[in-house]
Image (cartoon, rainbow, N blue to C red; front, side):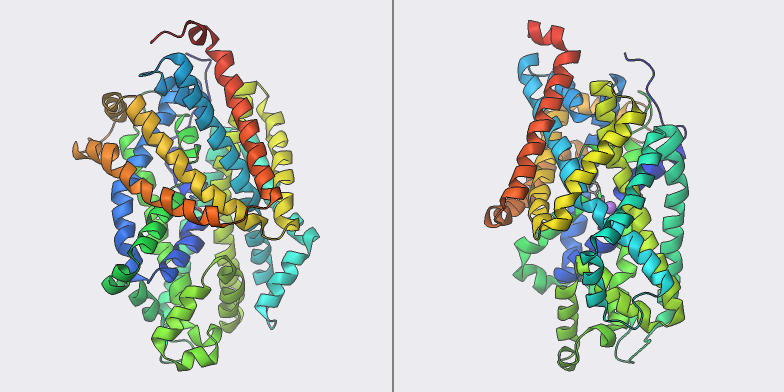
Length: 516
Ligand code: PHE
Ligand code: NA
């Protein structure tokens, strides 16, 4: 076994860090968007199916894999998945599974962060703009595009965010990350709850025909006919959301779990992570953007659409929802609230900032761990190396139109691919019985036996939905050369990195190539 690795100092810190990892922009922006675009209550049915039969089992798989890698001093996927695949393959075959997993994880993390960090930066900017009332009395769509075209300002808020991230990660896992999330996560939940209490008192703030209740009804009334008419599309959206929101298929759950002791519980902790994320998604994320949008519908929906009645207006809101919605339509809502809207808007964007920050910290740590463990670069130096990588990777997002959407189309597909690798390597090649035994090593609960079957057969089948679904638009999207170049470059770097990381450490057994 390796020299002493950093470990989580407290159980609470670990759980909050994992919750912070999972709870992100996905909960407060992406979730309401997916609900709104996929028939409201129609979406929730496949959503819960995907949660129980895909999200929960894959979460356990990643916790098990992470703690296993940590035992041997690894917090990155390359060496960890090499070791797991070696349980059924000869070292030289297992080697390639390690290399490819490491490559996928590295390239995903850098590519996703090229824009995720910018989105977090926008939230920082809008926290300030809301508190200062900057967009009050202005057309909010125009205000947003002016903000985006002011590159200096965009980089300023990006910089503030990423420097703080670098500081937190530079301090290490127990002394840095754990301390930061212990402050940020409770605040995040408190902010959300305060906002929801206020939302419950709103009723019909502008027009007796429109209230917050319309929003809740839209989400919570199962819409079977919509589901029947758009079955594939809604199932795809739901399985894709489960994945994204739980931070699966990235390597970062494994990375956090690698800082556990070898006998620390993973079974209950995995479920706790899922529960905290789902509370922050379904209960909190579902009670803010959509109910606000319906309560203030007359302020955001164009008059001619409003005249066509509620269904038409809800449909309009559904189509409008998306990334821009938070930065263009919701600010109109805050403006309509009057003075309290400044406070409310600032709370909303600060909440988004915390949510994004605590997810970004996990991805940042993955890359720093890679430099630290695989390449022996000191954490204090590695942190700033990654800062530069992020800086360069983020530039095309600002300067090249369409780059973000192209990269995002690819990232969505690659996430599902890596989750598929999770199951193939950490369950099938590692051997299902080993997986099941590891899951119960030091466990505080017993997982019902039937979940073993869910993990083996149902989860990979459900996973095929987003794998196929995300592949189609990807083939239809024209990846222009900057996006293509970035993707290929990250693969090459990731492959080289994991190739040497595994080679260096396991040279002897690779040379012998005997079943171990
Ligand atoms: N789970 C995070 C969210 O909900 C997003 C995320 C996905 C972060 C994948 C890292 C990796 O926003
Ligand atoms: Na999430």
